[in-house]
Length: 99
Length: 137
Image (cartoon, rainbow over all chains, first blue to last red; front, side):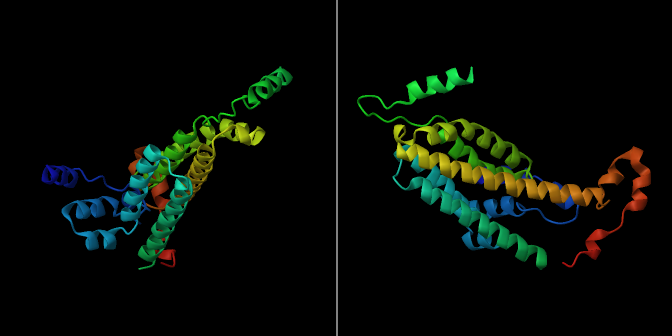
């Protein structure tokens, strides 16, 4: 089942409009490759390709858990996870563009 | 009309005798939209992120007003959800908007092959200065 999902994802990679038209990568470039690497089990490869992916999965997992159980400080934790994730993505993007 | 509206809200806004608190309307939806907007920014080059974020902000406006009028009437968790969702929406909109603006400016500068795609704008190809090589990175 998982292999089928990976195969489908690999054959349906969506090209980046920015990269095609403007010649440089966008904020989300590497996201799909990192997701496929993570599904294959290569956590390190996924972190190298796109460090923001794993915090984002944690963010969504926590969002679903928070919506079900309604933690006391859940919204606060979600907010800080969100800001941390955005910071990771932007720093990674700047590093990627400079190199 | 407005006075009537505010009167209605005030009469509704009084805390019921039992002291039972309500959920703010839309607070969960705003939280979800705010957090999903970041995926929109990443996966669709900003467009979907801006749309979702703006929907989140619009949905958040009414409950924000209700919350300011009488905060003691609503549950604390829904207020926190609303605030967090609003902040996430604002970040999503600003990030996606900044990126879209950057792309638009670069297109206006005649960068990239965008104008070459449009057949009726052949003259624009003369303005295709390779700005990428001028950028410091």
